Amino acid sequence: MGRVIHFEIHVDDMERAMLFYGAVFGWEFEDWTAYVGAPYFGAITGDTSEPGINGALLQRQSAPPEANQALNAFVCTMGTEDYDATEALILEKGGKVAIPKNALAGMAWQGYYFDTEGNMFGIHQPDLNAK
Image: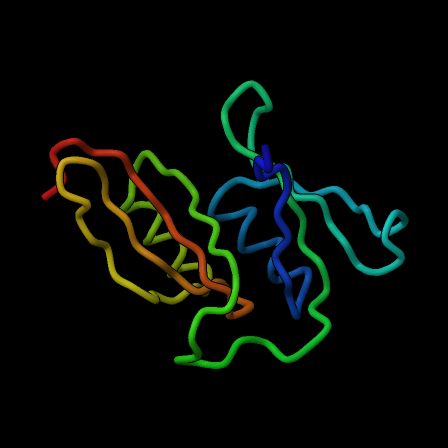
């Protein structure tokens, strides 16, 4: 079975991206450049005893996504226990709203944002009372 085991986020400014994801989601980074031969930083997204995957930030090799461009990629969604606090942190650290907070009735709160590099990602807070 083809289970997702790793992700990569293409970035223009490595330091800015690491600061954003570190501040918003608490990710830690390891320099894996020697393995790849180009700027490549492993993203440690949480405790390995919990569900989820780790990934990496890599230097973008082409033009960044343009505003209002149709999505042409995978979108990673991060779980959160406090949607509103996470959204506030995203905006404080330079992210922008792509699709505002929306109730997935009886299941969760979901919304989408752009990081400091123009990439879209989602956040998701389980809530059986969402409506």
